[in-house]
Image 1: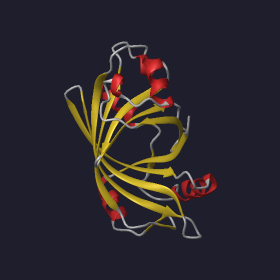
Image 2: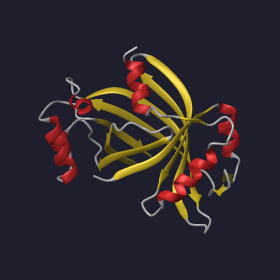
Image 3: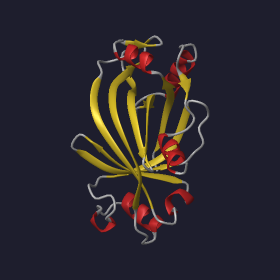
Image 4: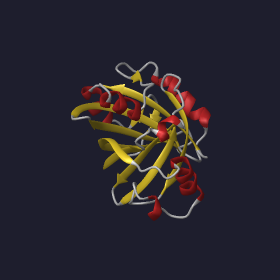
Length: 205
């Protein structure tokens, strides 16, 4: 199962809007921002089989693309998140019989053991993306500045989050250098809790 490595930070509205007008972050050059609307619906079985197995399951719609994404619930180390993940290209999150016949889909079907999936809560995100460049000018990470709105259990919450995900061709050392540089940026706070964990906390309040 592939591993996702990313940095996560919380920040206020003023800092988020200042970052959107910049062409670099902590000395690392950025490409121009591109904005997309992203909707995530998190699912689990009635007996929370996915969570009990150590995963979070979300259905993501980003532009014309849809997929199911299974991510391990691995504890973060400050801003540093490292999780196993798999993707299933489908527009039918709660209908396993319509999923493609792939190893990833078979893995998830075995985990569910025939139990139905039900939605837990929804995230609406206005995502501003830019590639982060190393000293040679090559992209090594994807920066996402997200205006996030949770809808869980009849409650709504909004917050900004900065995510910087290592690209498949990127070097982990470059991401660690960026993490070290970001420690000195005022107003940026390491976010150890995932969006799933914060949505689940809202649901159970």
